[in-house]
Length: 81
Image 1: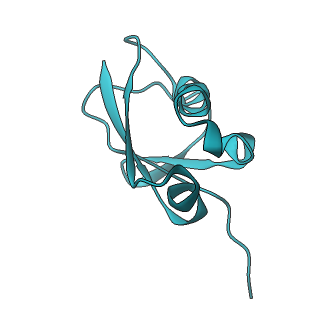
Image 2: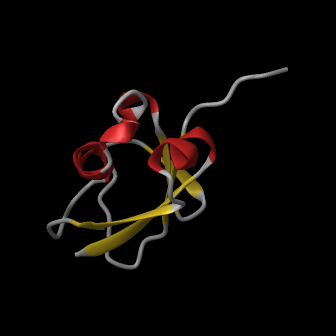
């Protein structure tokens, strides 16, 4: 299935683009997206394990299964005060 992953903040800066299109098997989960991003966009390797993912409007952990119509966003954790 084809998935478009929106990149935000430092992830977008490192990748040099705001969206990455991935081709994954049916039944893929967020962990598969994480690995595919690392493979397809090596610039994201320093952030790969810390990236946060949202599917639709909810945060998603690595075990969330994805469908072809899901909206996926990823961004690095932020801190501040």
